[in-house]
Image (cartoon, rainbow, N blue to C red; front, side):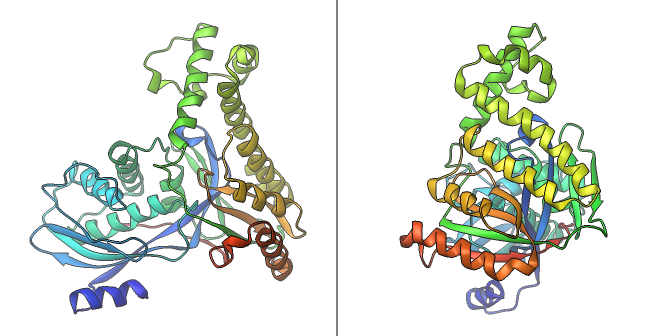
Length: 389
């Protein structure tokens, strides 16, 4: 493992251990968790590894194989975010330290097994780092505490208006099961793949464009949805309070239908995505339960369409990938992965078509964007268990 080799090169000793967190995909349920929606998702067998060892002086010293410059801070003096890749780790230290006593630091090297963009690498980095920091400090977190700590770090330290989709998929998921999560009360089901279900693999098509939630229009889209919900509450006479407490889950579909024509177009589109995605998630969970992967895939393609036209996300390259996927035999369904600004697309595929799928999608995509040859890539994955501490 490259992070292990890099650790030895830097510190001239072997690391104490290697922490791991999987990436995640969300075939149906995108742009929903931050307003208490429902999601379906998987952890996959690729993710973030951290080779690490303890530092008794309380210093945290981290390097990344994907980003330049080593980052350093003390467990008692974390400081403010500085706008670099290590803010997610500072945030994790900050969030963990609020509820648990930290006595020692650590040094480590981070390695991602897939290109950055759309697989929730930020949440995976936080979770893998929390795994390591908890271990060296003798802290044991429950699944719920792990999810909440990672969420606190990304939302309240880094400043991204995320929900708990990413952290939940990367912690709660189990191999060969679909995670069906209600973000309102955190209740969830792990729905096994039916014996009657056709075989499937998970394909990741990386567009060649890197992705950052903090630097994208992600926060703006969430604010537009919330503005629409806030207006719906006012139009309908709902009791409402602070803007940031307005949640689409608290306004009914019927209320939305009655007053949506009064919303500005952009607000109405964000609401349209949220409410229709909620219905797609419920239908998708039932399709998976009965083993109908074709219907589940169709709903995932619908989710991708709504992300383009209602949520208005996706770079031209990513939209082209999605369009090629829709026209490729053997792909059950798929969509943008992550917030949908650059990054990658995911697809559920029939394994017997794997070779022809890779050939067709790659050829058509690189014909459209030849300058991305050498940056574009395809990765075949399986579902996996989530991380534990």
